Image 1 (cartoon, rainbow, N blue to C red):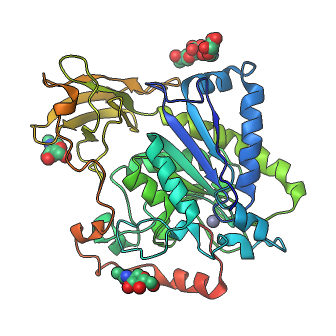
Image 2 (spheres, rainbow, N blue to C red; image 1 turned 90 degrees about the vertical axis):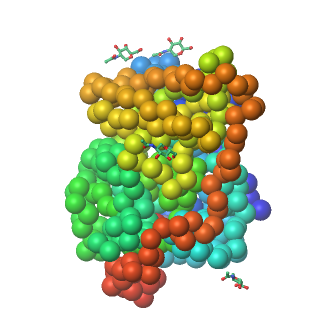
Length: 390
Ligand SMILES: *[C@@H]1O[C@H](CO)[C@@H](O)[C@H](O)[C@H]1NC(C)=O
Ligand SMILES: *[C@@H]1O[C@H](CO)[C@@H](O)[C@H](O)[C@H]1NC(C)=O
Ligand SMILES: *[C@@H]1O[C@H](CO)[C@@H](O)[C@H](O)[C@H]1NC(C)=O
Ligand SMILES: *[C@@H]1O[C@H](CO)[C@@H](O)[C@H](O)[C@H]1NC(C)=O
Ligand SMILES: [Zn+2]
């Protein structure tokens, strides 16, 4: 029955403004993984006290709307009796559900009872067009990127599961890991895990069903990675200042990445913004196509380079347009490109065919699920030892 609190930091925190991308951090969905929760509280303090003093933070706050949820599982956090580095009661919520196995899954039918925390987050994701996010955990030190689950078509036969945006995800994970002096070493925890440069594909590490990161990317148009921030899930209080020192630069730099790529609005000939138009990059087709929001806006996270953007109003021919994302730093704004479509119709006469992606089962549309081999030895070992991280 505890509330899930979100604090929004921005120049206009109470509402979306056109051109200002929405970013979020969520921590403590496993109640016994406490470092992220404390780091986010500290981050809030740091952002609001640096505003107007530190030019970089001021710029960030001027150009970004930052949503921070320090605890997604407050009941689990309160349930921890004896803080432990490896396993405590509070991982699950009050009903004993692991919230990072509780979301719809695109690759397998995830028949679980959707928990109030999960339902609340799914509703929250519908209220904004979140562009970039991270999900903070503990028990290991690594930046892990989607997918966490997969099929043959995503590379599961090779013990990995990659998105069409893999270059961007690797870049995002490296952006975080490379600024954290312990994470980037890749082998700092005494559990024999070795992650080159402190980065891994989620599925390669170990597959999981119903995770929040894949859900964000597939259904909420939001790129999310999973950050494992401490070898010990619930370290002693005295360690907190060193966790802040090791993560501060990464936390700030990661938020700035919401300004990668290209953004803009799609209009008809009369200058009316067009919602629900599919805006995708060629050769980066998402399972659920990414669409403009109610202001006709799109945000596409892309690395510097040349791309073809494919804009489709269902029932009409696609409109293709080329963009070149420059090499130089974007300076708190993605490349801005508005697009005019050759329509005269009024806004509400544009057909909207099935605006939300079918929930379940998407995996039936994907090739051969059963042929996927999972990296099962590690999974077997972690189940045996009851050690789960993400
Ligand atoms: C941030 O926004 C404030 C208020 O709109 C403005 O006065 C200030 O110049 C801006 N600062 C930066 C660094 O963009
Ligand atoms: C889902 O789980 C419920 C309860 O365990 C069960 O009754 C139901 O048959 C399951 N549905 C499917 C499609 O597996
Ligand atoms: C553009 O997108 C539409 C709808 O998603 C698709 O049918 C079409 O093949 C795409 N065209 C190109 C050239 O990528
Ligand atoms: C980025 O923006 C800031 C504030 O608007 C400005 O002072 C700075 O020169 C800009 N940097 C680049 C590389 O454009
Ligand atoms: Zn976790």
